[in-house]
Length: 118
Image (cartoon, rainbow, N blue to C red; front, side, top):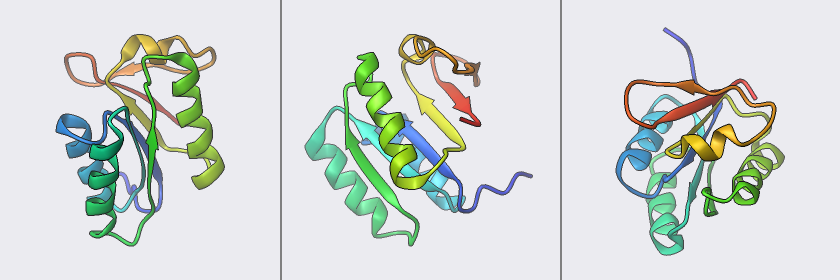
Protein backbone atom coordinates (compact mmCIF):
# COMPACT_ATOMS: atom_id res chain seq x y z
CA UNK A 1 0.00 0.00 0.00
CA UNK A 2 1.33 3.44 -0.93
CA UNK A 3 1.97 6.04 1.77
CA UNK A 4 0.39 9.39 0.85
CA UNK A 5 1.12 11.20 4.14
CA UNK A 6 2.53 14.67 3.50
CA UNK A 7 1.96 14.51 -0.25
CA UNK A 8 -0.18 16.99 -2.20
CA UNK A 9 -3.43 16.37 -4.07
CA UNK A 10 -5.07 18.95 -6.35
CA UNK A 11 -8.78 18.27 -6.74
CA UNK A 12 -11.23 20.13 -8.95
CA UNK A 13 -14.94 20.18 -8.24
CA UNK A 14 -13.80 19.80 -4.64
CA UNK A 15 -16.54 21.74 -2.87
CA UNK A 16 -19.23 19.09 -3.21
CA UNK A 17 -20.14 15.62 -4.42
CA UNK A 18 -17.45 13.26 -5.68
CA UNK A 19 -14.80 15.97 -5.56
CA UNK A 20 -15.46 16.66 -1.89
CA UNK A 21 -15.50 12.94 -1.10
CA UNK A 22 -12.14 12.54 -2.84
CA UNK A 23 -10.80 15.52 -0.88
CA UNK A 24 -11.97 13.96 2.38
CA UNK A 25 -10.26 10.68 1.47
CA UNK A 26 -7.00 12.46 0.63
CA UNK A 27 -7.08 14.27 3.98
CA UNK A 28 -7.77 10.96 5.74
CA UNK A 29 -4.67 9.58 4.02
CA UNK A 30 -2.62 12.46 5.46
CA UNK A 31 -2.34 14.53 2.29
CA UNK A 32 -2.28 18.30 1.89
CA UNK A 33 -5.06 19.29 -0.51
CA UNK A 34 -5.74 22.02 -3.02
CA UNK A 35 -9.49 22.38 -3.46
CA UNK A 36 -10.55 24.02 -6.72
CA UNK A 37 -14.15 24.86 -7.50
CA UNK A 38 -16.15 27.47 -9.39
CA UNK A 39 -18.61 28.03 -6.51
CA UNK A 40 -16.77 30.39 -4.16
CA UNK A 41 -19.13 30.36 -1.15
CA UNK A 42 -19.54 26.58 -1.20
CA UNK A 43 -15.79 26.12 -1.65
CA UNK A 44 -14.87 28.43 1.24
CA UNK A 45 -17.35 26.66 3.55
CA UNK A 46 -16.15 23.17 2.57
CA UNK A 47 -12.48 24.17 2.90
CA UNK A 48 -13.06 25.63 6.38
CA UNK A 49 -14.93 22.52 7.50
CA UNK A 50 -12.21 20.21 6.21
CA UNK A 51 -9.35 22.35 7.55
CA UNK A 52 -10.90 21.96 11.01
CA UNK A 53 -10.38 18.19 10.74
CA UNK A 54 -6.65 18.19 9.92
CA UNK A 55 -3.29 19.79 10.62
CA UNK A 56 -2.41 19.41 6.94
CA UNK A 57 -2.83 22.33 4.58
CA UNK A 58 -6.12 22.88 2.78
CA UNK A 59 -5.84 25.49 0.02
CA UNK A 60 -9.11 26.61 -1.65
CA UNK A 61 -8.83 28.17 -5.13
CA UNK A 62 -11.83 29.58 -6.98
CA UNK A 63 -11.51 28.58 -10.63
CA UNK A 64 -13.48 27.55 -13.70
CA UNK A 65 -11.32 24.64 -14.82
CA UNK A 66 -13.24 24.35 -18.09
CA UNK A 67 -10.99 27.23 -19.15
CA UNK A 68 -7.36 26.27 -19.79
CA UNK A 69 -5.99 29.46 -18.21
CA UNK A 70 -7.95 28.79 -15.01
CA UNK A 71 -6.73 25.19 -14.87
CA UNK A 72 -3.17 26.42 -15.29
CA UNK A 73 -3.81 28.94 -12.47
CA UNK A 74 -4.82 26.10 -10.16
CA UNK A 75 -1.75 24.09 -11.08
CA UNK A 76 0.58 27.06 -10.67
CA UNK A 77 -0.87 28.15 -7.30
CA UNK A 78 -0.66 24.58 -6.04
CA UNK A 79 3.01 24.30 -6.96
CA UNK A 80 3.85 27.79 -5.68
CA UNK A 81 2.12 27.27 -2.33
CA UNK A 82 2.65 23.58 -1.57
CA UNK A 83 5.40 22.45 -3.92
CA UNK A 84 5.12 19.65 -6.45
CA UNK A 85 1.87 17.74 -6.33
CA UNK A 86 1.45 13.98 -6.27
CA UNK A 87 -1.97 13.77 -7.89
CA UNK A 88 -4.15 16.18 -9.88
CA UNK A 89 -7.72 14.94 -10.23
CA UNK A 90 -10.36 16.61 -12.33
CA UNK A 91 -13.81 15.88 -13.61
CA UNK A 92 -12.95 17.47 -16.96
CA UNK A 93 -10.83 15.09 -19.01
CA UNK A 94 -10.80 17.36 -22.06
CA UNK A 95 -9.57 20.35 -20.09
CA UNK A 96 -6.76 18.33 -18.56
CA UNK A 97 -5.77 16.76 -21.86
CA UNK A 98 -5.41 20.24 -23.37
CA UNK A 99 -2.34 21.04 -21.25
CA UNK A 100 0.80 20.11 -23.22
CA UNK A 101 3.27 17.89 -21.41
CA UNK A 102 0.80 16.24 -19.04
CA UNK A 103 0.18 12.54 -18.74
CA UNK A 104 -3.47 11.61 -18.64
CA UNK A 105 -4.57 8.41 -16.94
CA UNK A 106 -8.17 7.27 -16.64
CA UNK A 107 -9.18 5.91 -13.28
CA UNK A 108 -12.22 3.68 -13.12
CA UNK A 109 -15.15 4.49 -15.35
CA UNK A 110 -16.72 7.76 -16.38
CA UNK A 111 -14.73 10.95 -16.80
CA UNK A 112 -12.58 11.07 -13.67
CA UNK A 113 -8.95 11.50 -14.68
CA UNK A 114 -5.70 11.95 -12.84
CA UNK A 115 -2.38 13.50 -13.70
CA UNK A 116 0.21 12.09 -11.36
CA UNK A 117 3.81 12.93 -10.70
CA UNK A 118 3.86 16.52 -12.01
